[in-house]
Length: 276
Ligand code: NAD
Image (tube, rainbow, N blue to C red; front, side, top):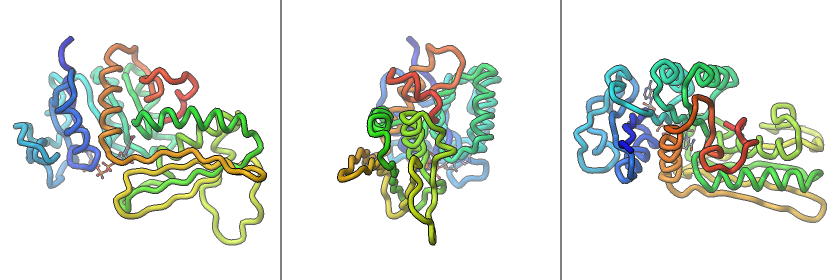
């Protein structure tokens, strides 16, 4: 089969660099173009040297139109408004769209789902690591089995992260809510401050820590009478997300238009289709 020709969007970012590094070492894919924000200081720079590699002879461009001809897929770890716009272009052009961007509002997610309904093949996940996909399954099972235990989700990320709770924390919250057959929107407690009163039974709490260069730590605590179960994941390197995104792009080549998650790619579960 021909190599998949991939555009990396957000090439100048932390994940953009990780995506370029993963791509050049991955069989079956080739870097077709690198894209970043119009006016960014990385426009015109070589995508390889930007990612800490040897020069690849591919300068970062600011226009999707310049990158599109001949491309098969776009891997996009940028910002919500960018991902929504790219999803619409993917519907128009048939480009496979892998979205790692987090912090999307319900309206953004609806627009992305609409693009998938209009013909785009989109794989979207707040965490593209294999370990997190497995953890989500375990959390769903534990939430169902420990039906009256209190659930708290704790996450820590580097100091430059702009959204909270993390996309991965929300994936774990959705998994816990599925296990309990409740709506996360109705049951989540995202902030506690001041005189909060006792904990309301059945809620799913979130705690957000920010600092340093932490790539991504997540723990889900099930606190019951006389015992606590803790399930956790630590991302040590961004390559785990980049490899999952690449695997998703290759997988999507054989799929019908629609909105998928990394769990679909890994064949882990049908129920996690809503966790994006
Ligand atoms: P970053 O700020 O380092 O990089 C974002 C890049 O996107 C920047 O280079 C920026 O200039 C670029 N960008 C902005 N507007 C653009 C446009 N119109 N066109 C093209 N590029 C544009 O951020 P990061 O740490 O790389 O994270 C990016 C996103 O990925 C965040 O939402 C983060 O939470 C998410 N993330 C997801 C996963 C996952 O597995 N899903 C893992 C890590 C990070």
